[in-house]
Amino acid sequence: MEDELKFFLQYLQIEKNYSEYTIDNYRRDIEQFYKFMIEQSIKKVEDVEYIDARLFLTKLYEEQMARTTVSRKISSLRSFYRFLERENKITGNPFLLVSQPKKGKRLPDFFYDEEMQALFAACEGEEPLAIRNKALLELLYATGIRVSECANIQMNDIDFELCTLLVKGKGKKERYVPFGSFAEEAIKRYIQKSRSILIQKNDHQHSALFVNARGGPLTPRGIRHILNQIIKKASLSGKIHPHMLRHTFATHMLNNGADLRAVQELLGHSHLSSTQLYTHVTNEHLRKSYLNHHPRA
Image (cartoon, rainbow, N blue to C red; front, top):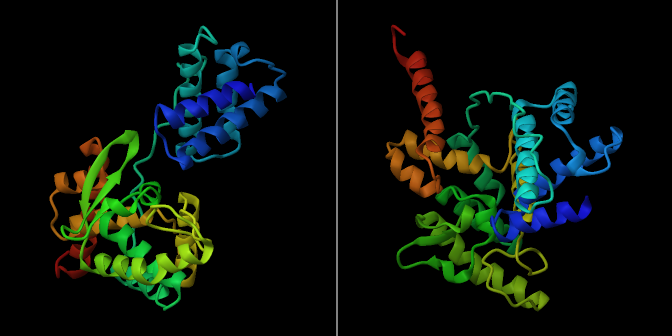
């Protein structure tokens, strides 16, 4: 079973070009199912039947997992078995007819202007790592790019004359995203006063824009760790996660009158429906403003 999982993960990496974070989720989901198979004395993936898939779904519900988590795990296993079918390892997909839980329309969380100011204040400093963190935060907020996309940025992907960034997104799709003067200033300062020091200090030679404390390329996991540290330092309360910066970018753009199609292009969404979720956030924002300020609301 380990060989089958290994080949599937290679397929996701090479053919699907999925991010390290996404591949790790697939691996954990399938390994969890492998443990379930051992509990049920099922020795081979081809021995799994529809009734076993249904039993696994019941087990997930009994563990009181969120609907989105259950849906992702079923989707992961459905894709895994589809891959095995393609490779002629099995003759049927036991997860094909397993119904996924309906996803609730959960609005994306975002930072308010005051919270963003607190995050930027938490990055102030003259140390190389503080300068890097400020550039990282400015760029993520200025462009709305994913953490995985940020980790893939190379030095020659930045055009300071046009203030644009070449972003390599999901499925090998590329797009150009503009960035503003705050991000431009922070990135230039980082390249001049931080990146070169970190690389020379540790004798690393590569073209990745963002580097870690040892001078090597910064990974998506490393970026998430840095953002979590910034969030903690800013002492922000509530449920907070690094992907909120992407949500914040989209929400603030729409709140300030940006065109929905333009935001779709900037985010790299294939379908407008993915971007339309943010209109619910802005509509709710307008509704609250109306209720708070209209004399006859």
